[in-house]
Amino acid sequence: MTLPDLFLSQLSDPFRIGLLIALFITMLRTRAASGTWVPLAAGVVFVAVILPTTVQTALAAPLAQVIGVGVVANVVIVALIMAVWEIYQRARR
Image (cartoon, rainbow, N blue to C red; front, side):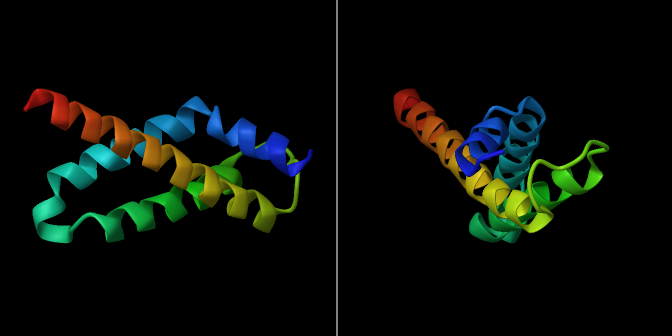
């Protein structure tokens, strides 16, 4: 599997998207105690590591490569979630 194929498959993974939405909601609820960026960064790396290591199928690429592409895909998804949240907040005012 090529890197663009791996990246697109990770971007379209509904379980990954659901985990990152839950991460974002949790960050919003605990923002006063833990801030914004540290929980998001830790969550992005956690999701990128936990998904390929718990899957029972054979990996399409070396584990380090899958995790690295997963971190990039997670950052893109979280950036989209944050953009949608910001648009919602501005529209609500």
